Amino acid sequence: MKKLIILLISIILLLLIIYIGLSLYITNLAYAAERKTPEETPPDYSLIYENVSFKSYSEDDIELKGWWIPSEKEDIAIVWVHGLDSERSGGEGKLEMIKEINNMGYSLLTFDLRGHGESGAAPLGLGVREKEDVYGAIEFLSNEKNIKKVGLWGISYGAVTVIDAGINVPDLDAEIVGIMADTPYFSVLELLTKEVADRTPIPKFIADILKFGIIQSGKMLQGMNINDVPESMANNNKINFPILITSCKTDERVPESHPSRVYSFSRESSEYYVFDKCEDHGEAYETNKIKYMELFKNYFSSKF
Image (tube, rainbow, N blue to C red):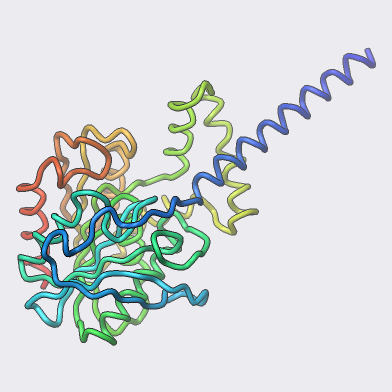
């Protein structure tokens, strides 16, 4: 009987160690980013640009690096925010998209978020802490480029960032007048457990059991509750203007159910467009260039 008790205790301890280890591993994946250098630069697309740097709006004094791409509309600008594990160019093809928007007459600021590209190291925040970087970009545009009105436009992790920035905006020197969110996720926790089930031998029900451990390890190690993301997305009706959200039916990394839930909480008259096909996550533009640009143009022309 004593040996059986010892065996049971040993099994429970082993399972607990495995549970804690997996929770910590998945949490570290969620809060880590891969630094990359730009795959393309503005001269590749004959874009006039300026290398710029500015500080995040946070108290951490994070230095952020970016490109300022001017155009004829001197007092308005678009701030573009890249996805996770990306950088200011957005990867191959995104600068073509930025050039199309620049050709519409919009000046653009694209920059590396904290912990990405050439910007300063800082704890990541799943799109929630990063709003401080966006506010820093807006203050830079106001103070250095005399910009009065700003449109925010982000993709995936960047889409969550611009929505959260619109919800919690402080008293800035330039006004946010519009937000385009390309494939925002609703719940990081759901995406993580799905990835675990899809990419490892761990069954879905066990991956779901890990949710508690992921939440707790995030609080202890990162000082952040991973559920702050769905809480923020569910409050996007606090943004004082309608927003534009897009998604894709074939996106496997951020399924269409995520952007549609974000949209379900949006202010009346917000827009939601679902592309039938995208070659990969974050490639709505590359697969649907004409329609994507039409959505962008129609939305922001009504905001400026």
